[in-house]
Image (cartoon, rainbow over all chains, first blue to last red; front, side, top):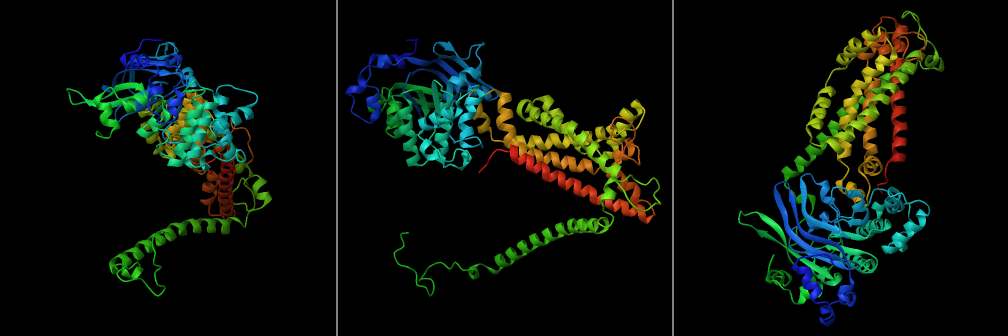
Length: 295
Length: 305
């Protein structure tokens, strides 16, 4: 187990806590395997992200565990999306963004000099807040990632597999040649998920994937996340605490703090199993936030 | 649908707001009519010159139009009546085609650099400024520039010199219009592609360019249409011929605008008729070209619906 700061340690020292915790949803069932069995896919150690001279997030340390859903919650401006984007080097695309500390993926520092960000993103996919299908046909949307990664041969089978995996196949199998933009918002988001899983990544990052969707589409995506967590590791940023409580195994609570120079920084307050965060949080600020006394 | 009582068909209920047009103040009603009236008037005024130009050119040019007019050599005396414009049509197609071949790819690549790579770097800002300045350079100045820097150096008039001058005129238009179109492509699409592990060039080629292609085509078309109608640089750098010259690199050439200019300024009816015929031919060529490129662009364009 790679070294992680205290929050991770908290988790490992309570391996079976969720079993005894009151049932709050299917996530408890998901964690009933002994916690030690879930290996750490990614690990953040003292990660800070700067935009130019502004330090957006400071000193974040947490693990991302295999085949588990890790939720990042917290008020606006607390840096949760920033941290998420640092996990597959999407911050590279923002001029002036800089990541310090170490983000490791299977023990390799993804910010090491000889690491190609393309290789990182190939394995750590991302689903964005606003559904952003390419203005191409449904088929081409899914096949895009396969084509750019040089996957040849039975594209049709791969496309069907990905669309089935994203619980969209039955709805679109008769109109694969129509534009992805003709779908509804929830279908577009599932198309984006299909596009992401088509290239068979290891980790899927989701940046508020349901914030633009209605409750029915949201529940479909949440069910899908549960299914996907059997084969993928998922990290999700959400504003919706109920969503985090419903879907995730682990929760990281971030908040924004004002330092001595009156500058706001994002900070990780607490990382633990979701059942503990929502029933018995270790930090007063977490408790205030989840009980609605703050923000 | 919570209203329980259906309103009586005779009129509105007691105390309900009056939604009829008559309830608005006189001032608002008058202003509304004046505004929509002046917009329609403005449209009419804008369409009148357009319609008149097309009607006049059709009216005067259709009379001389014939297969012979499109094929035959230009009479070497303005005094002579009868067809044709063949060499000028071939010249226009070749010279403008060569200019487009040089200016459009260069311009689009330039725009890709500006919007995708250069962004706000000093080099990019300089190029952008120079392109803006170049857009405003009068075509006759560009003609003179090619005259001293190419025609005098090579030592003869050629069709290619005309292509060079037209390409210089087209380049800034293509760069700036293409850049604007690339800027309209949402960043989310680029990010989505990069997040799938695509390289930047691949993202540009397979996502950004197809999303912008129809706008880029429009911009390029404007540039081509403008170049096809340019007179001054052609007159200055291509010389004149009366029989078809298909070699752009050897010997003088001619083009429709130059022929319109020369023939229309003659006192002879035959020459003036040829000028009208040439004008009609030029308009038809530009229209045909527009239609063809639209069809091509639509095939490449990404589906929006």
